[in-house]
Amino acid sequence: MSLKSRIIQRLFPNNKIYTKKKSGEKCLYLTFDDGPTPRVTPQVLELLSKHETKATFFFIGKRMENHPAIVRQAMAEGHALGNHSYNHKGFKFMPTKHQLAEIIQTNELMSEFNIQKENILFRPPHGRWRISLLWQLIKRNIPVVLWSVDSQDYSKKASQELCQRLLQMPMSDGDIILFHDDNDQCLELLETLIPAWKARGFNFQSLS
Image 1 (cartoon, helix red, strand yellow):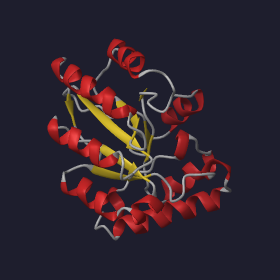
Image 2 (cartoon, helix red, strand yellow; image 1 turned 90 degrees about the vertical axis):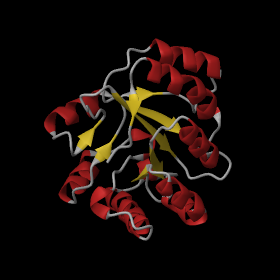
Image 3 (cartoon, one colour; image 1 turned 135 degrees about the vertical axis):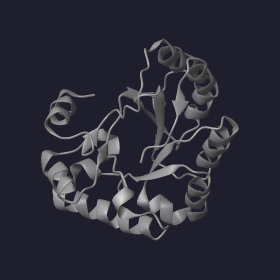
Image 4 (cartoon, one colour; image 1 turned 120 degrees about the horizontal axis):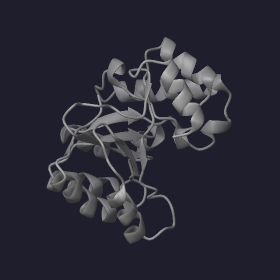
C-alpha cells in the first residue's frame, strides 16, 4: 500500500476507503480484477466452487456487457461483484469528471443485473486514484476498496516463486488479496494457497 493510501485511510472511515476488513474470525478476502473473461473467469469460478470458497470480482463494465452469462454465473454462485470502471484502459489519465462518469456508467450497468447500487464497491484500475475522485465517491456513498496483499499474478515471475512468497507472508484477519482473472496465473497459485490458508484456520468471504 502506498504512503498516500495509508495517509488517506487514516483520514477517512473504513467504510469509505479500505485495504483490510477485519471480521474477528480469521477471514481472508480473495478479490479478482479485470474480468469477466471467457478464458479464465469460468475456471476461477470452478476452482472456488471446488474449494467451497467465496470471493469478490471487480468487473470491467465493457466486459460485463460482452459476457453477461459469466456475470450471472458469478452472482448465482454467491460471489460479490464490484465496479472496476467501464473501460479500464487509460482510466488513470482521465479528468476526474470522466473517471466519475465511467464509474456511474458501470454502476448503472450493474443495476441491470439486479445489483443494488448501494451495495456496489469500487476499485480503481491499477489501484490509482485522486483526492478529487475520492471526494466525489464519498459524496455518493461509493466505497473504495484497495488491498493489503498483492499476489503479483500479473508479473512474469514463475508461479512457484509467487506462491512461495505468499505462503511465507504473515497473513492476518481482514487481509484483502489482489488477483486477476484475465490470466491463468491465479489458478496455479490458488490451487495451493486456498488449502494452505484454510489449514492455518482462515475462512474466505466475499466483501459486501
